[in-house]
Amino acid sequence: MARCPSCHGSVRFDVRACPLCNASFEGELAWHPIPDTATEDKVLSDHLQQEQIRSRREEGERDQQVVSDVRTLKRTRFECMVCNASRFSIRAVFAVSVICAVIALEAPLDVVSSSPALREFVELMSGIFPVIEHYSSASRFPEVTQFYMASMLVAFPLGLLAPLVRD
Image 1: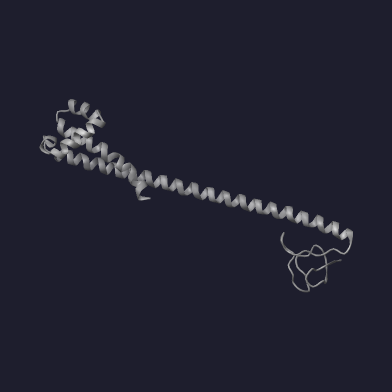
Image 2: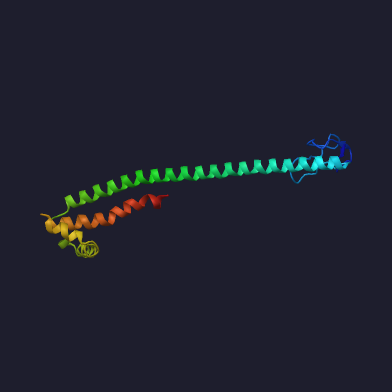
C-alpha cells in the first residue's frame, strides 16, 4: 500500500483523497500517494501519466469549446450588427432621399443662382462629380437638378455611415 504524503497513513494509489486527513490527490499539481515498493511506483507513475493525459485532453476539449463559443458569439454579434446596420442604413438612405427630394420640389427654379453659398457648394460638388453637370444639362430644371444631385451626393454616404457612427 502507498502512503499519504500528509499524514503517512496507508492509502491505495488510485484514491482521490486520503481517508484519514482528507488530503486531495486530484489534479496534476496536487499531492500523490507515495509508493512503498518498486511495483507500486511503476503502477503509480503509469496511473499518473494516464491521469495527466486525460486531464490535458479534457483541458484541450474545454479550450476548444471555449474558442468555439467565442467565435460563435463574435460571429453572431457581427451578424446582428451588420443586419441592424443594413436595416438602419436603408432607412437612413431612404429618409435622406425623401428629404432631398422634398427640398428639391419646394425649391425655387433659380435656387442655385439665388444663394451664393449654394452656388459655391454646387460648383464644388460639380468639380468633384462631373455627373452633376451632365444631368443638369439634360434637365428642364437645371439648377434644381444641380442642387438635388449635389445634396444627394453628400447625404447618401452620410446615410450609409450613420449606423457605424451609432454603434
